Each structure stands twice: as structure tokens, then as C-alpha cells.
Length: 162
Image (cartoon, rainbow, N blue to C red):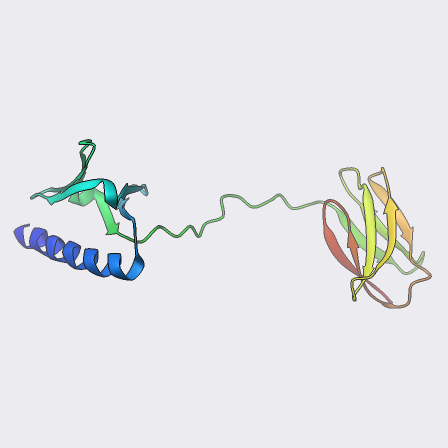
């Protein structure tokens, strides 16, 4: 345990000078084994002490924070990177498709559709319609064959007219 403490002190001192000059960090982050990340402002820290079993962080305010070595996953001067998405939006049950028989674009939704705009691939708005229904058929027989974008309040989807 004595070697571990010495190693942590040496690593901590080395990381301190490298991280502060390279990263211009203003906080010490303690990553615990239970997934928590605690930050301590370096300007407010008075002392960090490594004992035989724990790390004690003492801010100038005097409120000590003590962490057992076994409870620490990592000490760092780099801010945590958030990579998780808290939740994904629910998939819309809206449908859009082109009906070659009727030459209409059919829109179906569980909610009111509202306004609908149809754009060509150059971004030019070709149609703009206000609807107050959950299903609509928009005639596109005058449009040439091609790929088009339909935009509603709820979604943006493409359709291909043959």
C-alpha cells in the first residue's frame, strides 16, 4: 500500500503540472466507482492529502471531502466528456408515400398534420398547403418525375415520383 501511495503522489504531482499548463484546467474531477463525477475548483483548493487508505480534498472553505482509494476510479484535470444520449425521441407513426395510380402524395399521421410543403431537390417550394386532418392526399400530377421533399411540422421525408 505504501508503494501505491507514493505512486499516486508522484503521478498526481506530474499530472498537476502537465495538465494545468497544457489544458489550462480550472477544476479537479473525481470519478468514483459508482459512476459519480465530482468537481473541485482549483482556486478553492487548499490541500490534497493521500493517506494510507484514502484521498482527502480540502477546499479553503474547510469542508473536507474524503474518498477511499477503492471508491475512486480516476482523478483528472480534464472535464468529463458526455457521450450518452439521455433518450431517443419516439418514432413517428406517420407515413408518407406516392401513389402512382392516383398521382397523389398520401400523408397519414396520428396527430393533426397542419401545414405541408413540397420542395424539389433544389430547395424550391412547389406547394404549401394548410391541413387540419390526420390524413391527406395531395395531387402532384403536374410535377415532373423526380425526387421531392415533403415537410410538415412533425417530420421531413422524401418521395419519388416515377
